[in-house]
Image 1 (tube, rainbow, N blue to C red):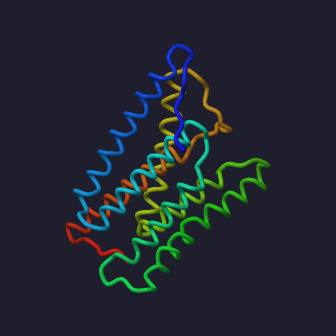
Image 2 (image 1 turned 120 degrees about the vertical axis):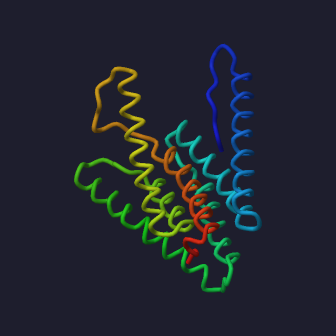
Length: 203
């Protein structure tokens, strides 16, 4: 589900190097997740890290967020709701509520922009990924994650345009998932650190 470039001079070595680099990054993210949150939540966070990295790589290469990875991340978020302290059967409803609260405004923005400009300004995959952010994170964290991803995408686009000496275009298409997917894991990691220091307890 993650694809890498092949060039005409050495396709296989490039694929091997990219695969090894991907595996190393996944290993680092998994170990970090388990160190910050030992136990079930850390294990689920490690799965989140791997899925978000896969989404980021695929979106960077193909401008596409695979539904399979998004669905897996959302499903793990629901499972996580049942593993938290004091969890009950109704605990699964809270991640669903947060996911709806985060993704629906973006979905309406997608529809509004499409009607206004006659083209998409936001992909449906981005909306689904926002639902994942809501399912995993508290609402303030999810909002901060989306804002951070948007600012990072804009900054990266401007920096790339300056380096390549190209003019900025309002119609440029950016792989938003490349920035939002890693930000979701960073948001989860931040919540775990705050939880460790006793600042808040997930709802």
